[in-house]
Amino acid sequence: MFTITEFQKIGVGISGFGLFFLLFGVLLYFDSVLLAFGNVLFLTGLAFIIGLQRTAMFFFQRQKLRASSFFLGGVALVLMRWPVVGMVMETYGFVLLFKSFFPVAFQFLGSLVNLPFLNTSTNEDK
Image (cartoon, rainbow, N blue to C red; front, side):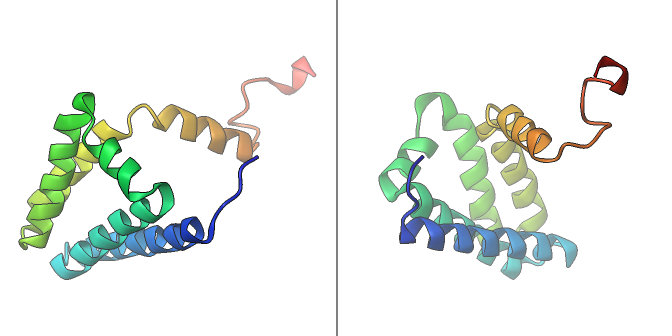
């Protein structure tokens, strides 16, 4: 098991606030100020969690350059007060960036929540 530093704990909190402001900005009909604040907090929290150098390496890998340009371009558009277009571009970039992570996350959530309709085995097999 690995230890979690204080910077990583702070990063999780900052990222959580960023996601909250992003959700709140979308719920308030794409309020550009809340979305911009959420974007800044999310990216800052990510830098706190994995480090500034690893964050830069993650976004600027050669195979992820298109996804990163969509994501960071969307962030820039939100900061320039084009929230709807910026969020569409940002969402597309986010999906491209983290598409390899989604199956792992869904598998983890499936194992965390052991509901009968999510389980592949039936009661007759037991």
